[in-house]
Length: 158
Image 1: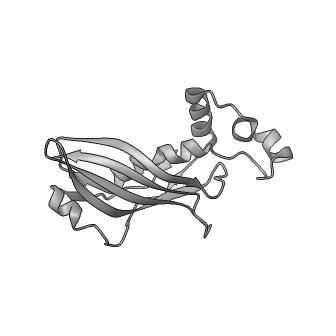
Image 2 (image 1 turned 180 degrees about the vertical axis):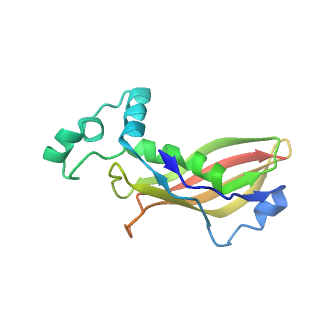
């Protein structure tokens, strides 16, 4: 996978994150999903379905006209894209969970993707932390339909 040069917006405390509620989404750089990345994901997860890892068969038999990335590979890009889009001066941050995940369109191998991150809410949690609910839309370059939408929940400790 290749990623364009990122210029992350930096936030130093929970108050700065709260200011993002209702603001315009933060947009990541484009990232290209290549066959080597799909193959590594298949190895890591054991998901070797031919629509992902057999380009010749996928071109012949798949309704997509070629190999496509795993939906869960697409989903797994969200934390990395967030990290390249938002820099937090924090002691620690953790992925807390996901809600309402939908894979709305396939990702053909070779596609470039980007994410839009809109802050839905910021709430206090134990130990001086905050929980952030991000509304995430993953887009494929050249397509009007998103490839994945999800609520991504993170916790941050400043």
